[in-house]
Image (tube, rainbow, N blue to C red; front, top):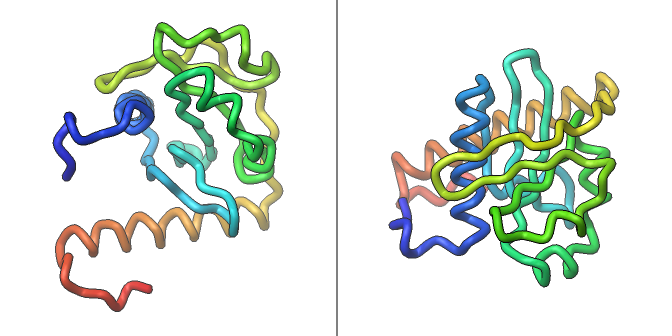
Length: 149
């Protein structure tokens, strides 16, 4: 596990988001790849099977350089931005959710609108989530094993 000092600002924010989602009953995976060419900062799987995507932005330049965020909408029921208190939130699209956080916690400021995934897509995402989480756990327990592909 990386020491907090070794984490980038976005990774620290992802940690706080994951902690907040856990308090709501969600399981989370960071740096999750739902489809080739996409990598979400945090994906949460909720207690009722809901799927949330949260993109963590450390500053204006980080947000402005993100041209792929709309591609994540097809992979979740709700989409959020997570930023710190110093972020200029007026840059963020109002039709998305907003969390404010730090390395220790986050708070939902604006709930994201719900766009329910189709059943088949939900099944695919949930299976990928479970497989990804299990492989991460295996890698922690057996870091020298490279058979995880």
